[in-house]
Image (cartoon, rainbow, N blue to C red; front, side):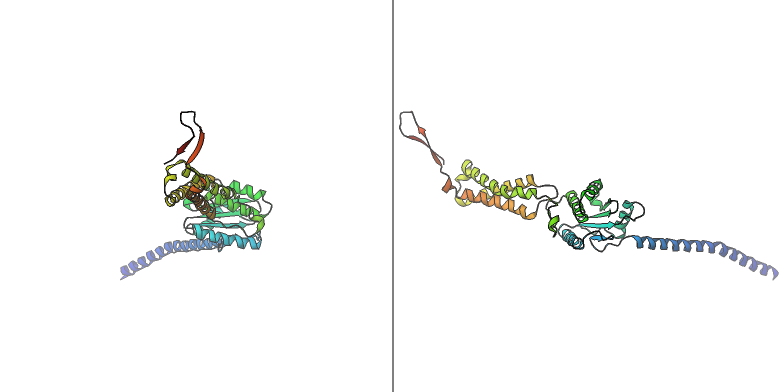
Length: 304
C-alpha cells in the first residue's frame, strides 16, 4: 500500500514537472503570435489603401485635374488592359520609398489588377523622390525610368503639369501601337504630348495616294485593266503604301487610332480615284518630233 502511494505520488510529480516545462513554451508561443498580429495590423494600417487610380494624400493636385486624370486612367485601363496607379505623399515618410511602394503594391494586390500589366508610381512631393513598381511582365521595360520622371517633376512649373509629364513618360515606356490615353480637359495641359506624327500624316496620306495612283495607272500594267478593277487594285496598293508611311512616321508611345484609319483609308481612296479616272487626265499616245526618214508626219506611240 505504501509502495502504491509512492508510485502515484511519483506520477503526479512527473506530470507537474511536464506541465511546468510545457506551459512556459505555450505562453511564449501565444505572446509571439499576439506581437506578430499586432505588428501586422499596425503595418497594414500605415500602408495606403488605394481606392482610386490617383491617391493624393497631401492634396497637392487641383481637384478638377485629379478627378479628370483618375477618369482618364480608368478609361485607359478599359481600352488597353494596363492599369496605372499614382500615389502622392508628403515629405514625411519613414524608410526607403522603394520599400514603401513595394509594400503598397503587394498589400493592395495590384499584380492582377491590370490584365496586360500594372504600374504603380509613388511620388514624395517634398523632395520629388520617385519609386515605380510594376507587374512581372513590365518589370524589364521600366528599369531606370525614375531619374527621368524626377527630372520632369523638377522642371515643371505646376504639380499638375509635372504629373501629366510623368504619365506621358510611362506611356512612352509602355509604347502601345495605338495612343489611347485621352487628352486632359484643361487647355494648359493638352499639348504635353507632341502630335507631330498626326500633323505629318494629315497632308501626306492624300499626297501618297495621288502619287501611287498616277504611277500605277501610267507606268504599270494596272493601267490596262478595266476601270473597276483598276480602281480596286490601285486602292488596295495605295492603302498598303499608306500603312507603310504610318509605320515610318509613328512616334514612340503610339499613334492616335483615328489618324491611323485616316492614313490608310484616304491614301487608298485617293489612289483608287486617280486610277479609275485615268481616261480623263492621261492619254496613251503622245506626239513626237517629225521624222527625217522617208515618211512624213509625226511619230505616234501607242500602248496596248
